[in-house]
Image (cartoon, rainbow, N blue to C red; front, side):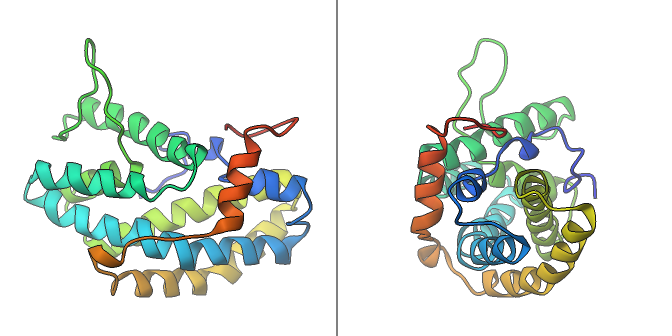
Length: 217
């Protein structure tokens, strides 16, 4: 619960991951559009990259096989299709590594006074924390996916905008999709990790030059 809480100080609420541009240009206009946008990402991005990578990273983190953790971390970052999507991942990763260091949780990434921070995926640090606290992989995956979904719905609530009741309805409607994404991710091996959502990549790239933004680029 602590690891997947919206109160975890990693800044996930600061990024719209392309949603802000999609709303600004009229691709996403109402609750049903948000549902479709998030469903596509859950099934074809989160389930194809983040969740299977999280499972593999937890296995290696449990053994403290840091060489393999670093290799899988690089794989996750290579799957980010734009600079902004990579920044979302690494900014949250750097925030979480600071938190893990303050909690004395062992991790292999350089981050501290006099060092140059590594490029760290949030997925990698989430896996390390989940392994340290002996959370089973399916529970960790559920917490990770729920945290992502909650942040995206919160962004849509501000941007579309949606009312609080509509947001809760949307979360309820997407819960079966979340379950489907978790099941799909269980059957994806390392060589199958990867995703391609062209509209998401375009929206993320164009968000950088949007005339006005509520969310980080």
